[in-house]
Image (cartoon, rainbow, N blue to C red):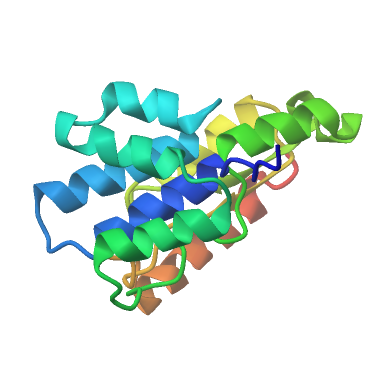
Length: 187
């Protein structure tokens, strides 16, 4: 029997994002987006996790997408379901690994990839965009965890779902980062 492989959690998430993009603003669109992010962040087979948490009207759709064998079948299903209109944006997570893919990489990859060997934080947001703490509080927390470095990844104004920094805000934040590094760089 020649079966095509099942799709990844990331592919299921992108399918749900594409369907959300075809919807007008409202509860349906938000449910598709939330379910897409849940699929992307699921540790195992995404469809089993998101089926339990999705609204009842969305569960048959998730089952239909999860049953698609391979990327071509999934893409065809999405195009049929959304009416064939052009996509409004690039895939949200193009080039990113889903949680399940990261877990598999950590298990099967080199020992240097083990989280206990990581010495920094690559992705965090301050209250300048959609985080809950200031830059200084986040920097101290990174130091307390033993990190040697970190990167602030606040959103810019262009992101639809989060408030973000304009050009002046980025400049001010850069000044604060430089000041922090001068005062605490050797800590």
